[in-house]
Image (cartoon, rainbow, N blue to C red; front, side):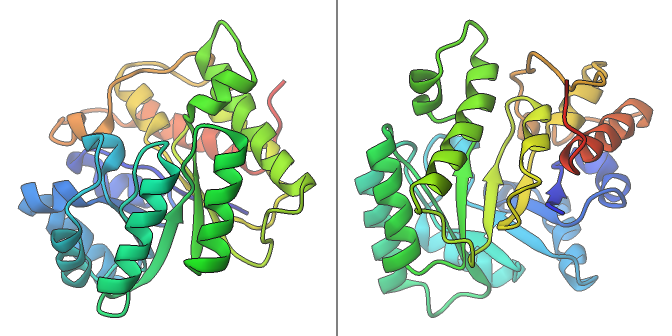
Length: 266
C-alpha cells in the first residue's frame, strides 16, 4: 500500500496525524514558525517517518541550499527532497550534482531526487540521471508538469494532470525506464481518484497532498468518484487557520485512503 501524508493547519496537526502514515514538512515554515517546527520535532521524536520538502511548490523556487542543509540537520527527517528547478532538466541535474558535491555526505537522512522536464525526452533524461548517476534513495514525480496538458489536452486541466501522470508512469514502465527496485514518491495531487490506478505499481512508496484537508476546510466533500475540480489555495496559506469542525476533513481523508487503496473511481 502507498504511504499517505496530508499537510494540515497547525490547529489539527495532531488529529490529522492519527489518520496518516507519515508527516510531510515544508522547510520555509520550519524557519518562519516555531510552533510548526516543534510539531515536526515531536513527530521525529515519536519515531514518525518525515519527509522534508524544499518548498519549491510554495515559493516557486527552491529554498537556499546552505540553509536547507542546516534545517535537515536540525530536524533530522527520514527523507529530504534535494533542491530542484521547476520543469528545468539541466538546472535540476546541476543542482543535484552540486548538492552531492557539497552537502550529501554531511546531512542527515535519505535523499529524494525530483524528476523535472517539459518533454518526455527531458523527463526520461532527468529520471535516468537521478537513478543512475545521482544515485538518489527515492525518485519523485510531480502532479502538474506542463507535459501532461501537452500530451493529453482536456478542457479540464485537472483531468489532464491526472491522466497525464497515469500515462507518464505507464510509458516509463513500458520503455523499461522505471527502476522497480527503488522507491518512488508522487508529489501532490490534481484529482484524488488518480491514485486508484496505481495498485499495480509496488514501487510507488509514498505520496503527499493536502487535497482532502483543503477541500474539507472549504466545505467541499469528496464524492464516491473523488472530485472533478480543485481548490487553488495552497495549504501553507492556511497553516494558521483555526479549524473548528474536522468531520468533513476526516471524511475526505478516509475517502482518499479508500480510493488510493485500489477502489477505482468510476
